[in-house]
Length: 345
Ligand SMILES: NC(=O)c1ccc[n+]([C@@H]2O[C@H](COP(=O)([O-])OP(=O)(O)OC[C@H]3O[C@@H](n4cnc5c(N)ncnc54)[C@H](OP(=O)(O)O)[C@@H]3O)[C@@H](O)[C@H]2O)c1
Image (cartoon, rainbow, N blue to C red; front, side, top):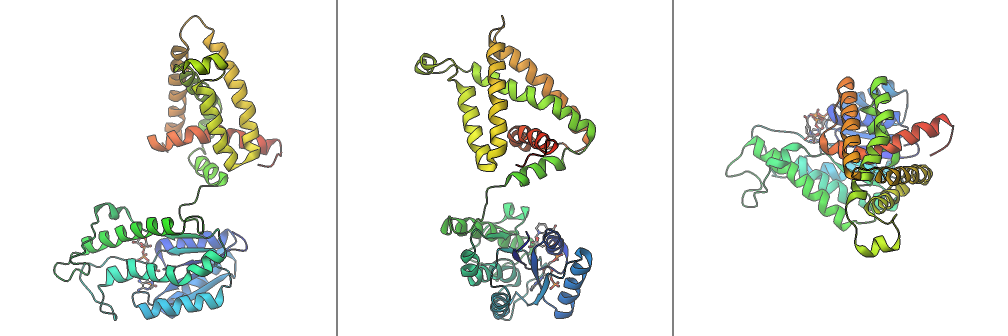
């Protein structure tokens, strides 16, 4: 993040402050906001002290008021000639209905209208430095949300939970719509980088025994998945062209394209590994029993090995994450091998 400028709204505490500390530690210059000037400056001083970096700016602003958001945007535009990331985080929950100076219900004003307005005011600066990122901090509460167009401000019937869930659903809808409108100009839902994936994989594979089990189990898992895919019948035309043209080699080619987008150096290593595994699959198919049977047996044994590793680690990824990790596991092994050989990726 060195050389990047980031604005984190609501950076005096909670998630925003933790985000700011993380980004400053990664080398970014970070601006934080908060309502009270003294508290915002104290939080900025705290982040400077924690990270040892002077690159923290305080922007006091009451964002529940639209004039406050406009003033904040003007100050940010003055201070940051380049703005790379906007983290719309400031938000809150109010059990009782309050109205802002603009006459708007507080939850809706702060949680949805403020990030909407701030993003609009900073958009030209962000898109001028594309690829920029905009992160809107929503909440799982959005799943319970419903946009009540007949009573957006909760004038007739207010419940803190309903207002909060509605505002967080508005965050999600705003994000999707903005992504659609800005397609290609700002990376709102950016493709994750290879270091993002490897970092996430490493975080849940720290225990040495779990790591060893993954070194042992990941290659057979990839081999067995290839064997299972190879076992799916292909159209006659494919088989006539080459015995190598099957669902295993086609899937490997598609996976390679994905790896290529992440890192061409690792993709080159994967190409060699896939070639070896495809040859091994062909050898397995020559055994007297069906290929799918040996593949399934290998898969079960290796998956159980991996499962034991996760139990030892005490951090089992969800089933969905495990499926994603099917693609990342081989990269993780290769990246470790590259590091040992002092090869860049
Ligand atoms: N905590 C959770 O469990 C959770 C779960 C899901 C999603 N979220 C979302 O994550 C975000 C941060 O939550 P959090 O728990 O970290 O909140 P928090 O600890 O209460 O911090 C809220 C931040 O927003 C700032 N803020 C509040 N009102 C403001 C205003 N009118 N103008 C400008 N800044 C204002 C606060 O600064 P000052 O008080 O200094 O003004 C503070 O820095 C919110 O959008 C929340 O909806 C939180």
